[in-house]
Length: 465
Image (cartoon, rainbow, N blue to C red; front, side, top):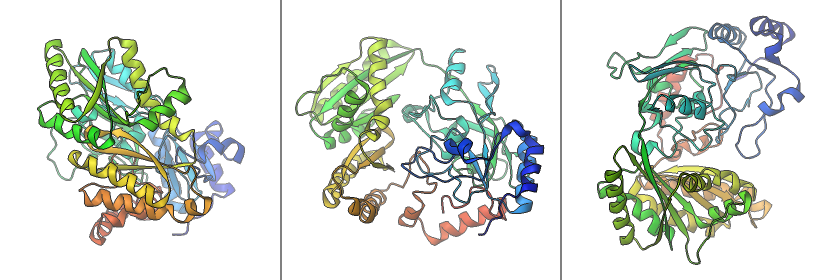
């Protein structure tokens, strides 16, 4: 679809809506908005605006819809699928000034927040009241809760407490026409027509712009235990994951890490940790609750399972400081790996029991095409992040043959009952792989939904499909 450019007259109209101080229109001032955390992709919008209110966004959408100007919503820019890139130029609407926690309702265990609130800020605010919002992606210290909603983001603790879909009750949304709606109700049950709240979660800013979010909260557990288990093979570590759940234990976190990732974290972040010879993989396992005896009993069950899968050693964190150090290893692994080489990151997810086959196939594909991979992720959910490392791969092969290797990884993922993304979204970079999983009927339905909400196709065009 052809979109119109932002003329001088339209720029004046935009400025009249949000004020001159909230408009960026030179390349120098917009540089940080030209990319997200997706490899080396760069696309400049024509204009960036930073509105503060829902009525301002409503007027901006009406203006752009009338003049057929592409609009790209943007959160904190921490995305890994190119979802916040202005590939058609146009107007970028940054949500960074929507940064208020509007209400924490302790009676109903709910909160109302604006989408530009940093996720960790929100987690800490409710924790001060003895409550838990368990959606905690690795980028929680910088990502926005609105971006988490848009991409259906996860994190370590959703394995026990459920994904973001289970914690978003209602949202205020500005449609491409400028009309403002609430998607649902501030209730735990909802059986009144189509569930628009669930439709908007994971829609990656293609259907509307979220301006308020009502979340469910739960009481915060008061105790936890953390253990790091080491294995001599990736497959043994992955096989132990499903077995832990079959033994009747649901950990509050269960993370997989490869040795190579650990090595780069130690090197990049100067973390002191002894890597023993022969150890190739690790599981970071947390159990939480309010009764120490129950937690210890769960840890004992977990330990018994680990022994059945050739676990070499289990380190129990014996202090808050040691727990923080172990979590730091996992949380900084992505940054550490990416600092060492040109890379591409994929976000595979399969049923838990299929993890051994998945990681074995990833390594075989890498050997076939000549690339290295470093895998880590939320193994308890079957969600494995695959960092493909250029290393010694030639520029020609990286440019021309890598896509075939990634295609084989996704074909394997789908054959194991999985899909293309567990929490990063599809955005721009994954959409070419969607036909590996989804049929023409799926695409027809999605395009039909898009046309109802956005008949002129102005909102985050070129993403998902």
